[in-house]
Amino acid sequence: MSSNKTINCVGATPPDMNFNLPLLSIIATYIVVFIIAFIGNFTMFLILCRNQMVKVRRVHSLLLHMNIAHLMVTLLYMPKEIMHNYTIMWNGGDVVTLQSVQILRRLRCVLLNIGAGFNE
Image (cartoon, rainbow, N blue to C red; front, side, top):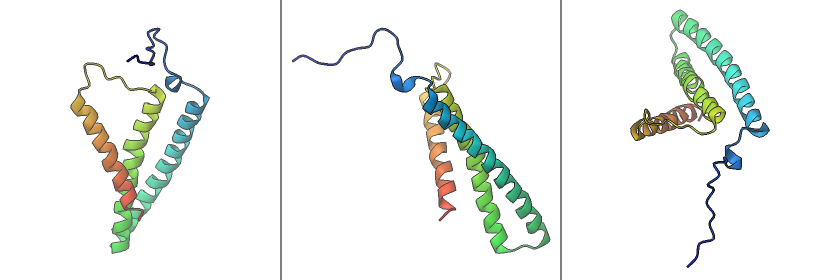
């Protein structure tokens, strides 16, 4: 049996690993969404904190917790995605072990579920 697979020994990066215009537009979109989300969520957080001090209501408490979840997604998940897209491929080398990569993947799932769970 012969294999029709070819091995790239030249050292050139595959086409999907190159920094190109579509990847740059994705990064720019993430940055714009990050700025809008941070400004909007932080402003809403300040308003809800002020309302919580004036009069404690269950609706304000629920909105405050939802807003905190959105801030967590904005401040933890979005910068990670921006850096992942900017570096195209994350090579941790010897410093980053398999456990830390698994922790980051689980953190990503948790943050996405927190943000999605409050929007229902």
